[in-house]
Length: 325
Image (tube, rainbow, N blue to C red; front, side, top):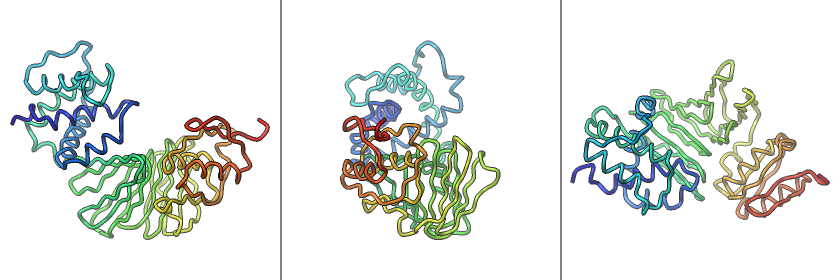
């Protein structure tokens, strides 16, 4: 079978295009991805192709739909416009389909230039354990995304949360990008939580180095220390942490020491599926304590009571307010 006739590859194109749309069905995508190893391989190929395409997007951005010169291009144009498939996307994503199709013809025809395809991991409501070849493990938090790439699988990009248990190896340095922060490590155990402009790093064992263009110099963190990085302000706060509390989210607990309320709310969404708006006047209020997140609504009520706040709205659209406001 020719690559352009491969139904798995065509389905991978559809999922990749849909992943940028708000209506993306992440649960269905996860089921499809885990149903067959060939699905992940195909999806990784498409994602890598799109990354390569991004480097030449301006040259490919033509106002009119292209005329397809090869069966490969025609196949993926059809995939991008097929209204029967589950993923739904609009004009912007259909244009991306045309561009991905053009790049696929060149990239798949010359695989030796591609290098190892990135490994992409997405989670919905449940966490996922990822085992690396060297014995290291990563526990990817719910509602998170991790990309692993590089010939030695030593470059990662995290959106969301993850607990890293990296085998010590002085011959290689692992680099994890989370938001505007880069975390470098040769072997240790640490937790990373990324939320928009904020990144939190907590070290259980060993040492890590964090750096950012917003910081004057790299910062080294040893076991028992944590860093709260605010990318919007370009500031980093270092404080002592309790190693026993690091990664407690995997046990259904969220433990805090002087944490900003906006970050607690973000964690409730990630780990308990509860969405709550925090107004600007309350974003920097501090919270210390432990929340049990087996029941998200109960955890939110506990937070409100402990902080002396008021809850307004309804499930799916909660809002924290000052009493009497």
